[in-house]
Image: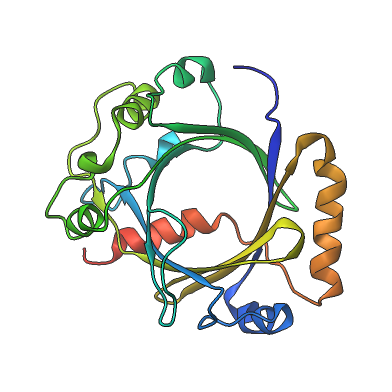
Length: 244
């Protein structure tokens, strides 16, 4: 696998002090019937010094457990487990060859107003609530919700077996909304950390122009966008400290 991906995800992050204002300007409420609620668990192995096993390898394991808000009849989106390599470098063709029949792979651009990189991910959907509950409470092993292809993905990048002590870290509460023109807003909360991300997926050939439109959309609404680094990295750092 070579070259550039066909799709790009454009992302802008609103930092904690400006989240309330941004939600109001977008007309979003966390208790609205069109909001979607989830618990997001990142999984890693933490050594006694607090270092994360996957950090230096640019790997992420993410469990997204979909929940029903009061007044909602059902959850329209399935639970999923995703493993991701970001930035996506190295022999991606060999990585793609580890995919199993139930795995959904995605190679795409990951652009913010200040940074551009590619990511390669593998997702499995339809994980049961009971399975997520047991894994998140450390009754079962994280490996139990990974597909064989996802394990092979991780071991291919690591160059060895999965680390001992792999577990779910403290959960992020995520509330998301579908906006007009294919945009999505997602609010993440973990303790004192709070982010609002506005994103959209576009064709790569149009990504430069669409990024400018994306920035104008936020600017015209008066929404202040931050640039304090990856929200996933910051959440992982905090989540890994909870309970230690």
